[in-house]
Length: 262
Image 1 (spheres, helix red, strand yellow):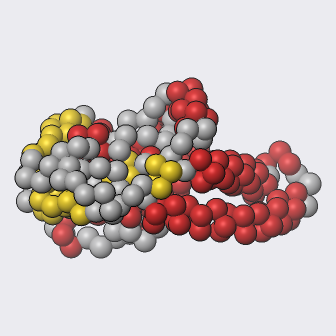
Image 2: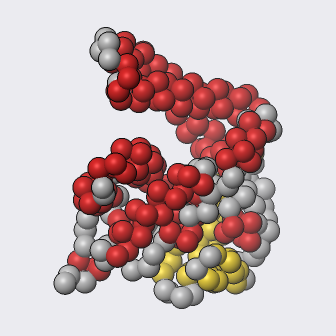
């Protein structure tokens, strides 16, 4: 058997194998959630690049029912040897009702964004608005099929439009109320907008993350939320300090090697 370091499989490649291995009756409902998961991290990202921080951050935005399906996928990629450890324990979803309430509430609360983060959200908003016409056209084509009982393309297009409009509304509110953080404020302590270089004391690897508002967070781009477990312990710490993050799989220790203003 090949060693873990020899595997160069991407998320989309492994997903195809995983779905084919499922019973037909489980495949449809599982496929939706797994594809949302891999699109978030990047279809062509290497499977062995996934980290506990990535998975934990994704868990903050999904429901328990979705988490159950994704844990099955993460257990599969571990069993097949694509990753060293089973990351499924790190995927801890919030209760659905709490997630919905928190999303609605956060859209009305002022976000503190870096200048770069503000610009990126504006670009995302513009891109989403440009997608509206193509989504409506997809719905029109799908609706041409008169068999609505099993019209999966129409249902998918409706879900995509609903997600699109919801995200546009969220971004518009966030940008309207946003406060831009001043990256020139001199301080020796970690604050929102800073880029932190960490040393993982267990694996001796070096990591770099930007500490951002939850609405700016994107683990695949090295941006972690101040509300995430790692973000919470890093805030207000100094260079040279060691922090610990409690996770279902154990305690992770990191040393703060450097702090750069965002």
